[in-house]
Amino acid sequence: MTVIMLWALLLEGCIRNCDFCIVPEKEGNLRVTNDIYDFWDGQEKLKLLDNNLTAHNKQFKRTLNQLIKEDIKTDFSQGLDIRLMTSDKAHLLSKVDIWGQIHFAFDNPKSEDQVREGIEILKDNGVKPYKLMFYVLIGFNTTREEDLHRVKVLDDLGVDPFVMPYRSVQGQEGKSYDKSDSYQKDFARWVNHKAIFNSVEWENYTNNSPLILYKTCSIIFVVESQEYTSLWR
Image (cartoon, rainbow, N blue to C red; front, side, top):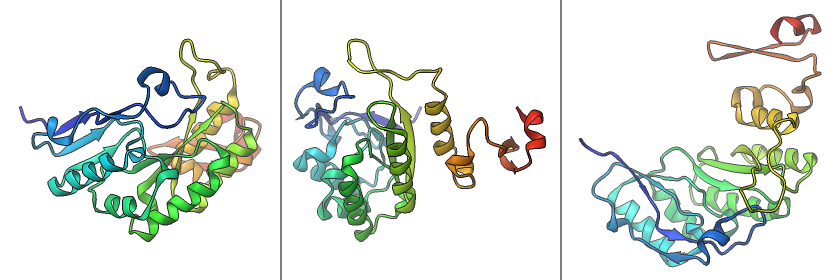
């Protein structure tokens, strides 16, 4: 059997100490653990599981040069740090055969300027906005207005937002995703279902709205009459 995809971890730990993240507690400080050639044996696709490859400049440069040299289709599945983006890093990323989209995060509203700057650096180096996807954490310490603002910022910049409701882990402080909280569920569904997101404004996407969505055969029909409410619920 020919193995065409490989999962790999090059680094452990992280330079950040985000309140919602358990990585620093589990893995400690950032350190190199592997090299591409320690495990890669000609596989066509590679899914990297590193928490913050962008934080280690030497390993980032070495890894991306190896990916480019071997023409490996790569998914940075855990995301890269947009706050650490530079022209040199963006130039290397533009030469990697990206599998899907390049993942980043916009978890803290205070990072908006850095997010905007990082996206512009990527665009200036030839990375197309549609190839960028940003995780957007909700339900931890942000308001609904801040959630919507972050999503709108990303959409206006031409990149894809992907909402992730916060879920705490055992022993970690902070609230977790409340299934009874319809806001988190509804907001995530609205943003992450692109056919809905691109056709319906958030203020219209509520349980009490006369705007009804009906999906069949992968087509979204938007019904504006209140008369149809009882039919589709």
